[in-house]
Length: 468
Image 1: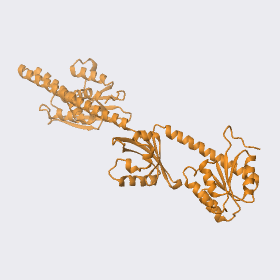
Image 2 (image 1 turned 90 degrees about the horizontal axis):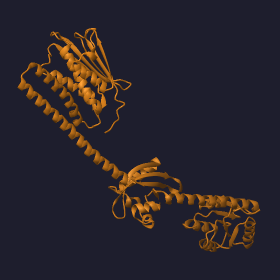
Image 3 (image 1 turned 180 degrees about the vertical axis):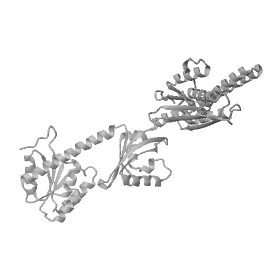
Image 4 (image 1 turned 120 degrees about the horizontal axis):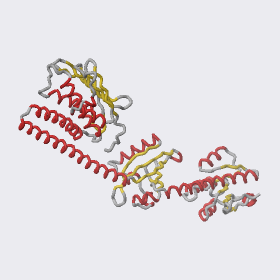
């Protein structure tokens, strides 16, 4: 029965034996299966025939004059164009040492004489099929390597380039021949060869790595690369490297960094100018207050200036912050408390203020309304909780809850509200501001009067999109 080669040419088998009868026998066995036998009677003729037309497989005797089978196999495996050919020794040599030497030289099988015809046919067929599979795999591998958009290398443990693909040739500007005469150290842009050698040893130890580096093209320009590398220990060891040109990405990142830096500078300038404009407004109001000399007007102007100052401080915090998208409400609240208590009109001798203020990072959208709300609640406690000069205490708590809400509570032990008081119908500016600011924050206001007044505000900033 002949083998089916599925439309491919029948495999050629080089038969090397110095006995004409053995050559004739083996040739007949191969023809019976549909193979093309190429019998030669000596080692030298075998090498010449293999170089003239590369066979698919070699059947090789050991005991031959002038050049034995071991030398023939060794020379075949030393030839780059022939080393992939599978070699089967067919010999009368039975010694274990001969078998060990045969396989150490690269043989794929070892058949001793006398042999069974079907055994030889089966082994030849198996190794031809394996050889075809290896060739198909290598063709697929080469197709992938040569068509990938990434650069590709195989590299020896000493850093010598063993294989490169067309993509890396285009990246670097070097030809394949030029690159195969180079080492990693000739291409990598590092301070010293010792750095490359140390990195090679690290990869051998770990077995793989992914890193960014810089190569120098043939024209001297920089080539920024991201490299994925694996170390294969078989066959003396080699590195499999895929390289991606990240130059465009790094240029885009640098452009984005510059644009962001410019925008941050503009934002900081905007915060600075807004704060300065608020200071100008406060100065104008103070000037008008001095001109009018009316106690009621003075009180209104002072309260208004205090509100403007709370907004101005938010812009000052943002101007000084590293992160322009958020502000620490806790830090902001502590500064507002300090401003309110250092004012000359604050009766520090009879009103004590205690705070429990936690760091609360929040987006800038809530900073100004929170500051105004905080100012109104705390200043209202100072102004109205102790109307007849009583002594008392104001407590301020600020924290973020486990479910993400910001909670502010201002409590006093003063006179509180009457049971018929309706905050929403109060009509005074402070009450209107508080109600409007709570609404602006999408929050909830809770008032409890009994042994003083407790004002609690809870709101979430999770619905606000981070923009910077």
